[in-house]
Picture 1 (spheres, rainbow over the protein chains, first blue to last red):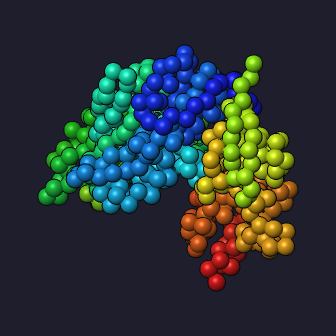
Picture 2 (cartoon, helix red, strand yellow):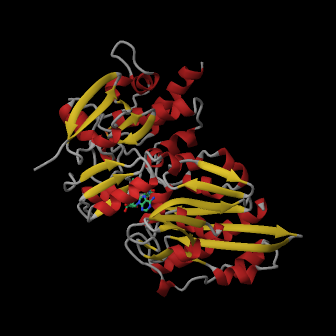
Picture 3 (tube, each protein chain N blue to C red):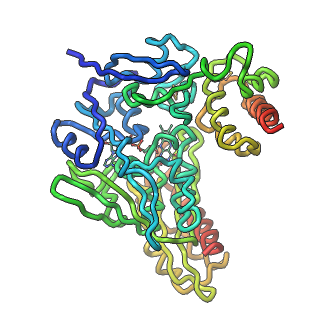
Length: 282
Length: 158
Ligand SMILES: Cc1cc2nc3c(=O)[nH]c(=O)nc-3n(C[C@H](O)[C@H](O)[C@H](O)COP(=O)(O)OP(=O)(O)OC[C@H]3O[C@@H](n4cnc5c(N)ncnc54)[C@H](O)[C@@H]3O)c2cc1C
Ligand code: FES
Ligand code: FES
């Protein structure tokens, strides 16, 4: 299928991208194109002008400053998955990136594009929430930082305003991490995915954050479970009783892939597995 | 009026210059303008992998990239991977292990496998299957495709 017509420009810098974005009505950023192009081909989306940010060097790559890791918005899933810095100091994003789609999708798709697209079944959102990431955003009137908890505002909706763009994501060092994904066999997306970030001190859970994707209309955080497990040991019996009825099926999405009740049950199971695995590493 | 833009792409080692509409997909430019019809189109949803080519050494779905995005890049298609009298190790593997039936998925399978082996010359069976997640085959049931890639890996590491 062929998209509607548009003009195409490659931005050389963030400032140029923002300027080009503002210059045309119905303009859109083009990063890896792996959400935008399929929907333009199906004519679900149309744009009059595409601003390609995949070549902006300042938006690419992973850097480390002390215990903080900064991932440029246009870093591909593959480069996140293979980042030696992330793998050693904060492996969750790298492990999540490695199970997105397939190798060709990972070679093109980017973290900034995935977060901006905010597909309710995308993988990164669960990890971003569990890590308490900060999302750096730039606009013509300056830059700001959005906390992961405030970032996703609805299905395919985020706190990024029109005319703004994501420039980077920062995450803390964390090794007690795990992502459990129940893969949809046809699409490769998550039917449900749960990410956990745990710190264990003296045998008990001293900090815990859990992010869920795929289950509801947007990615969510399980704050009730986090406080219920604070100070507890991460043994199987404790996790089994805590990870029960975590979300009400009535709040979840049911469709031909999985009923709401089935998704709710997956949240329980995957949360338990993710926390157990994360605790064993943390 | 449709505006076109000039692109310059190295395709299978040859510099190609063209004026394309921005919405021209890389796969359409390869097939229709350059007559490189070895790269196939099997879906409208970026899921089948029949269109996989290498762009600057990375396997990509050429139906999910505009030709304009390949400006300045080096593209390798199935036509540029090996020669009839000097097959690439993966092509040889598909020949030896009967890795195809109708052949529609084969160019994409081979390009995906070639990238895998370039990165990981000795993959496990699980790694091979994971690498093929974006390539669909409606004929073989995949077993012989996995064997073909194992054959190629053996040749490459021998
Ligand atoms: C076959 C297939 C399978 C997939 N499987 C999965 C999967 O299993 N899990 C998963 O999570 N995803 C999956 N995806 C989606 C994939 O991860 C996409 O790469 C991702 O959703 C979008 O990133 P992109 O860089 O390709 O963005 P694009 O498609 O270029 O852009 C997406 C949207 O974000 C906007 N945008 C891009 N960059 C920025 C920025 N820096 N700031 C603000 N807005 C921006 C664009 O304007 C557009 O609206 C799959 C895609 C395909 C085609
Ligand atoms: S034609 Fe199916 S993935 Fe490109
Ligand atoms: S051989 Fe026919 S689709 Fe794979």
